[in-house]
Length: 489
Image 1: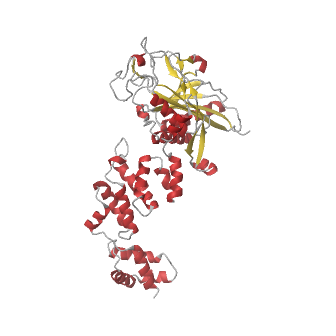
Image 2: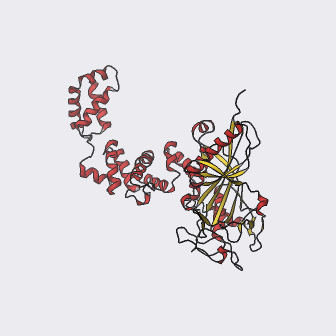
Image 3: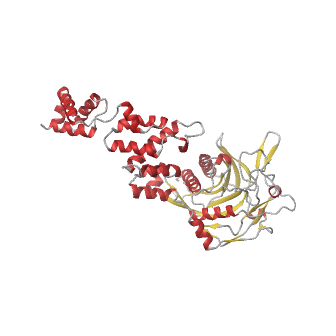
C-alpha cells in the first residue's frame, strides 16, 4: 500500500502599520525609537473620559491599499471593540473592524519559481478575504523574572490584510510577502520594516491528503519576524504536521510560536474563536461613509505597481524578463533606469549595467545592514547613459567599459573623463589596424590555416592578438572586418 501524500494549504494575516503623522484615534505622534512610553496620552492609555477621534489620513491610506489590491471598497464601515485582557492594551479592548471591514476581496500578484513556474507561468494571483483597519497594541519585552510593556506602538493605525487559504508552499508564502511589501512601499503606505514592527505576519498552516477538498486542522504560527522567517516557519510546520499524520496521530487547532534560532515551533495556546473576543460596535465612534468621489480621488494617487511596470518595461523597452525581475521591485531603481534611458541609445544595455554592475557595486559598498542606498551613490543616470553611449558609438569597448565602471562609481567622475585621462579611447584608425592585423596574420600561421580550413572560431585567436597589440583599444567590430577581408585575399 502506497504512503499517503499530503499537500499544504496556507493563509496569511499580515499586519502593516500605515505611515501617518499621528495615531489612529488620537493626535499623539506615531513613531519608532523614542524612549519607552513617551508617545502616549489619555486615549492611548485608556484613561476614564478619554474619547477616540478617527484619523482621516489612515482611512484614506486604507482605501488606497484596497484599490491597488483590487478590493471592493465598502460604502459604509464601522468600528468594533475586540475584548481581551492582556497588558499590551490598557483599555482591555482593541478598536478594530469585525463584520463591516473597509475592504473586501482583492488579490496579490506573485512571481512563481521552479516547477510551479514551469506549469503555471511566471505569475499568479493570490485571493484576499478582507482588509480591515484597527489600532495597534503595545510591545511586551520578556525578561527572566518580569516583563515590561512599552505603549509607544499602541494606538498606531494598523492594516490587517487577510488572505484566503490560497498559498501552497513556503516559496509561495515568500513570494506573496515580498510582492505585498513592494506594492505597499511603492504606494507610500508604509516602509514595511519588519525589524521596526511596521510589518508583521501570522501564518495559518494546514495539511491534507492530495486530492481532498476539505481543509485540514489549522495551526496558527506567531513570532515570525522576517519574510525569510515566515518561509522557514511554514516549512517546518508543514513537515511537523505531515509527520504527525503519517505516524497515526491527530492535530489540534492551536497557536504555536516559531523559534528562529533553533528552527522549530512550540505550542502557545489553543486557538481563540471570534466569539471569545465578544465583539460589539464601539459606542464612541460613528460608522464611516465612503462615496464614489472620495474613492476616485484616491484612485488618481495610486502609482504604477511593480508587476504593471515590469510588463510595460518588457513591451516599451524590449527588456528581457531576467532584467525586469530584479529591477521592478525597487521603485527608486526603476526611476533611475528610466532617467538613464532618457539619455542613452540602448535601453537593454542600460538595464544590463544597472541590474548587474550597479547593484554589484552598491552591494560591495554596503555594510552588515545591507547594500549602500542608491540615493547615497555618486553614480547617476547620466553616468550610466554616457557609458552606454560611449560603447555604442565605438569610442570604447565593452571590456574597457567594465574596467572603468567601478572607478566611475567610486569617484563620481564621468566615464568620458576617465577615458581621456587614461588614454583608453578605442582605436578606429583603419590604416593602423590594417598594419597590425597583417602582422598578426603573418605571426599566427596555424590560426590562419585553421580559419581557412573552415574552423570559424580560429579567428578569435587572431582578434586576441590584435587586441593585445593595441592594449585593448582596437575597435573589435572593425578588427573583425579587417581580418576577414585580409584572410579572404
